[in-house]
Length: 282
Image (cartoon, rainbow, N blue to C red; front, side):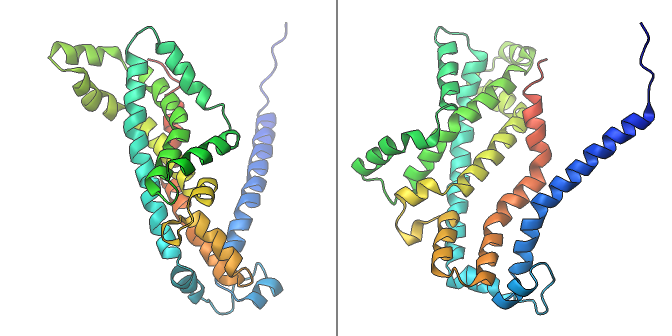
């Protein structure tokens, strides 16, 4: 049987095709954002007459209008508080649950793991009616704590799944040595498991932060008070109230996407590393 000869030209062609495809896809995703940023510094006539050209006069006041007059500053702070609270609660609860599921062998361990896994398979929209009924009966509308708990409930299965897989790859000898030295389970969890799980914790934290920041469905259903609305709902209101003022509207969109974009660009390596590390067993 003849061996296939190595052809460097074929490899170069394959890479060229891949890079060309990736370049085209990058332009597809970058162009809308570039258009939004440029349009946020223009007035209406200039947006329609020369959509992709640089503005003749940079209208920075569009951002002032969006930030102050449209109350985006309040919505921005609300989203920061909601998203950070969601991340903190999820890290604490999911890491504890993952530690138990990955390190303790008991009768219902597999059933609990399956229970949380099933939670990832239930679409959010299928249970909106019972959730809305419960929120209404308990009088929890216009309650940010209830909103955070909803985000936590729907993000918990994914967080536990990622952390459990990651913790299973941590070498047991570290815990055995700690037990010999007299450490308890809580000390092992706080001093060994959590520090070693930082890549996976970073991954779920970023995903959960972005999920809470971008979610508009729950605030739309359960938050009516303007003082409590997050930025996603604030942007929707702004679009309805000032839909004809495209410059300030584009500025509001830039403000809305700025935080998720910066967070992902800064921590994308941690996201990829955390997801990949969970698949490697020692």
